[in-house]
Length: 141
Image 1 (cartoon, rainbow, N blue to C red):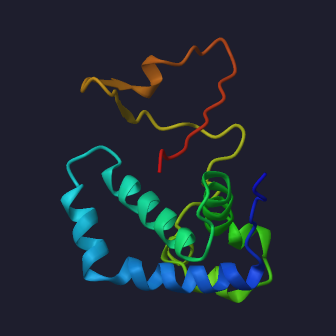
Image 2 (tube, one colour):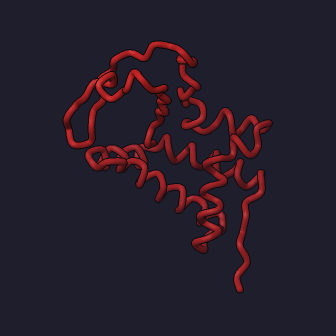
Image 3 (cartoon, rainbow, N blue to C red):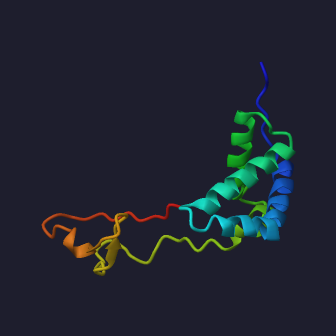
């Protein structure tokens, strides 16, 4: 039985640094651009790049590869005191996600919601004033 490999913090540092070099490369950016018309195409390009990267570091069986990729993606959470994981990856440096500006009891603007089928609906048309409303929002990416 083959053992599962798990990257150390130092290995993750090296992978993060190399990943950032790849992400800044013309080749990677061209691959993402060529997938621009495919829904989430750049995500597939990035996933393949990360798999290739961790395999280069010896995580070449399916389970070890998946574990290493997941650890690479979440290193800033697993090692919160490591500056490399906070300052090097572009997806951490440029992350604009936050808790939002609304709190309980705030008036929700009547925004337009775009359905996947291409039609639109106003948010207030979906709400029932006789019941409390909880709105959860997120990004697919």
